[in-house]
Length: 239
Image (cartoon, rainbow, N blue to C red):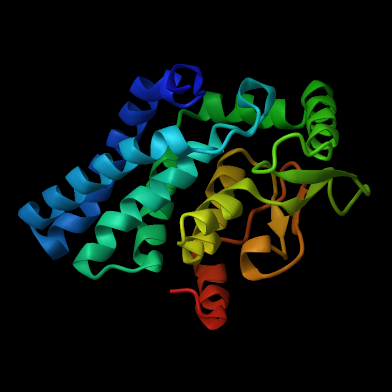
């Protein structure tokens, strides 16, 4: 029932979060589309998001370390749904959300970023992440991720994760907008740069690989970003 729906129970906060996203997106759209068209995109995107909320997939709720990413996937679907009515593409939608992501991390206080960096490489977090990866392979929730923890190899990386199923790709595919998938993946790089976690990733399910191979090394410069990856996405035919 709706009253037991994980996302509906958190509707107020989730809608508030998305409103902030839409307000940020509007600042990128107004110069090109004007205030009135942008207002319509904003209204439609918010309506889309509220409509999507009850149908967001169950991936275990608070049992899942990254359930919070499911509503983020809905951001892309909701905003894209309204932007393409004005002739905008999946790439246009992805670029706006990527730029907003970068801005968010640029304005995050340094001490907060340092604290998150320390947490991501703490033995407590790594153990929790291992347990989470093992749990995903029980496949209790069909819409969930499936992941294998990868032990570090010294100089190459501290630890990693091979995702063999991606909940976000499954979701946007179910919504008949699989073209959004590669752009959602790009959002991992600004966060890694901010938290100094040294992400390197050479394969993604969204780009047709059988795995997303995340490798983390504390302090390693993150050299992948929109500029290094967008050419590959365009070449694949995703626009």
